[in-house]
Length: 389
Image 1 (cartoon, one colour):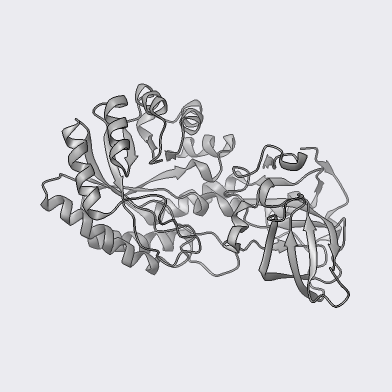
Image 2 (image 1 turned 90 degrees about the vertical axis):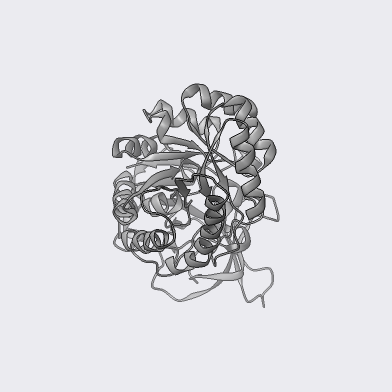
C-alpha cells in the first residue's frame, strides 16, 4: 500500500467511524482493505458475553490477518483452522495447539499427521474415508461428526457440500470408536449470514434428534460445535452481537444437556464490521442512450476481494463523495476482462447520478471474506492490500 495524506476528506461526508476517517484522509494507489483492530476486539467481547458457556473458535478463513490472530490470541480466543497453513499461522502467534480445531472435513493425510504432531487433538469428519485417515495419522484423536442440515433461511446457505445424514453419522461414530478414536460429538453450520437468531430453531431440532439417537446408541457425547452463521450488517437490521448470541444459546441450552462443551465458530460476525475497502470508480457508462441502467465499473471486483457478491448474496453498502444527491439504478461490475465479474445486476444498486470516473468510494463492512478471497493477480491486478489501524 502506498497511502499518503491527501486533501481527500473534503469530498466525503463527516466520517462515521475511525475507518472512514482514515480512508478519507489518505489516498491509495490500489484497492485497500482498512481494518480497525479495536472493532475486532469489541465484537469479540460482544459475542463472548452472549455466548456464555460456549467457547469462541474464530474461523480463521474469514480473515487471516496477522494483527487479528495476534489480538485474538491475547484475548484468549480459540481457533477453527481449515488447513495446515492456518494451523501454522495460529501457532506462530502463540495459540495453544489444544485451542485449535481442524474443522475442514476434507484434509490431506500429511496435514492430519502434521496437526497431530503439533498437538492438535480435535478433528472434523463427515465420511468413512476421512475417519480412516484420522485414525491412521492422528491416533487417539477426538472427532466430531458434521451433520447435513436443511437450509435455515440464511442469506448464504451452506448445505450439500459438507455434512452427513443421521444414520451415516451414527455409523461414522461406530467406525471412529472401533479405530481407537473418540467420537466426541456433533457439528453443523446453520448457514452464513443468518440474520435472525430465531432461524436457528429448526436446525437445532434436527441436530438434537441426532444427538439423542447417538446417546441411545451408547455414544458418550460431550461436544457440540454450533459453527458460524453470526451475521454482520449489510443494510438489513440485525441484533447486537451479545443479544444475538444470547438468543442462540437460549435455544441451544434448551435442547442439549447441561455441562457439555460447546464451540462456536464466528468469522463474519467477528471481523466483517471491522473493515472497509477504499476503492475507485474507473468508468460510468450506458450501453445505449435509452438504457435504464448505468454501468459502474470499480477497480475491485469478484476476483480481487468481492467474491461474496456471487449470486448477489451479500449486499455491500457504498459511501461516495456525492451521497445526498439524486440517485439512479446502477449495474456494478469489477475491472477484469471476465464477463462473470459483475457484482450486482439482478438487484441494481442506487448510486448518485453524478458519480464519475476517478471518484473514490468506500465499501462498508468488508472485514470478512475479502482479502482471503482475493486472487494473486488475475488479469494482472494486484491482490487486495490490507492496512490495520
